[in-house]
Image 1 (cartoon, rainbow, N blue to C red):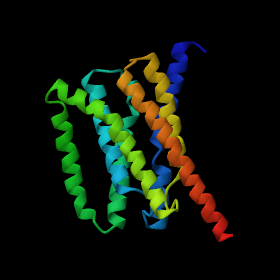
Image 2: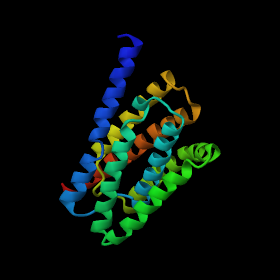
Image 3: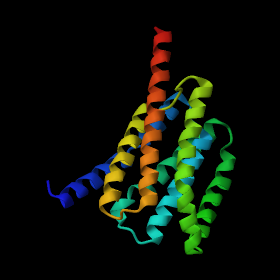
Image 4: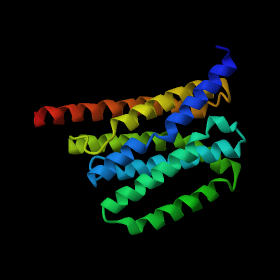
Amino acid sequence: MPADELLHAVNFSILFVCLVLKFPQIFVVIRAKSSTGVSLSGLLLELIGFVVFVTYQMYHDYPPPTYLEYPILIAQDVFLLLLILYYNGSLKQSLLYIMAFVVGGKLLTLQTWIIDLAMSLCTVISAASKVAQLQCLWRTKQAGQVSSLTWAMAVYSCAARIYTTAVTTGDMQVLVRFIVSTLLNLWVLLTALYYQRSSSKKDD
């Protein structure tokens, strides 16, 4: 397969996966009417990372196919955030969170150095979101309503983005972010599967 066709195929597969990436997690939370095991702080950090990343890509006029899935992921994360706040009885806080993200997104583009600095911190923010989810799993010692399918798709999308970034922009900050995210997503996935398996054995 020619390089261009492979790149288009990978970009399409990433977009397809990300169209439904958070759906398994959303359905699990709705079905259980609980967000046990899902880290609110982890989700908020992930949202921050997504907003910074897509703003950086748009600001520097990178090809849309390299970040097209992020607005979709942001919308899904916002919906999941509303669900978590609803089941935690703190839905009123959602307005504050939404306002903070909108204002923060505007501030990022005031100066080039601001968005570049934010992007340099994006890897740390993204990693912190995964670590927060891991800590939540370690603390509760159960996967609760964590969807392993969502995390498996996250592993694929980040791993595939390593390839697409390498052959398009070659931006090292972006590459490092995707490498770190792939490894940590895989860690969360394996941890969730471990606790789900342990829970199943106890039920048996």
